[in-house]
Image (cartoon, rainbow, N blue to C red; front, side, top):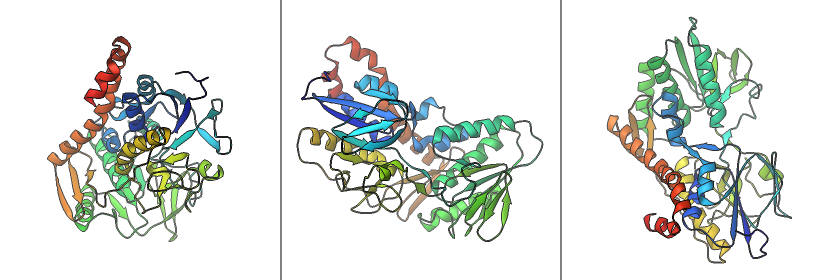
Length: 399
């Protein structure tokens, strides 16, 4: 592609989340003439969130549940920049990052995810371990396991947050420690709500409450953490809880740079988008996944939406480039939720429907590996794309 051609347009993808991985794959399959694409991501490897509990528990390897963005971009002829974006200049359409020259864009898309909002917890910038960014969490988790492998002292593990992420991460850590180590640990889950998994049906909540009780996991509900130091978590009610390893899985928080860059955001800092996943303040900018606030209706911060938005985002980016009509994203009102329990056992729910078993875990495993397989196939075809002149046409027939 000739970057000096004035007819060439530039698309910049900020973040390597689920939606952008799908966009990159589709742009690789359906090459768009006259469009140069750049993807900027902090990390080369982006995790598939649905498989994170399985990775913590020891069921998966790093490779099996991470997408290699550099290889994906190599195959799709997308320029990959490993860097963190700190602002965008919407007037001059430039993206600024910490380790690269400013990137010019005609179209921009943001899919940077979210991470726990710790702004109201004193000391959280020094103590505890947020579940996101996943790379940092995994490094601290593995370091802690290694340091305490031979410890004779009882270890106190605390997870803060009683949503799906908190429950799954807690049970995955419990399984890993009890199954694969000699660490003597006690587990506590702190939840600000009256019950864990408050957005799920009563059967799901009851199942996990009983399951954690049988495992001896302590639940502390109606409890908000307001501060932390090197030894204790401090609750709003005046109580304190001692810990050795803390994981933050509380509600999602937004990055600061979109608001600072004058994009229209909601009260929490998430980019406001319309039914086309397009910024309501800047029509040349799109956003998807956790970093976006969908104006037509409020959506939970869940990976299933980011995955579904990927296809619509791809179509609308191409439509915008070709000056065609955009398509609306229509979120499903109810979606199938599959929650793991630590071992190869899972719970499924959709609305009031509820069932569980080993077979549910293997069903979930099949779905998750199927999602990852689409990117593995792209990597395997890199060499073929270099060797076969007719590969682009052949590839379009198979996908």
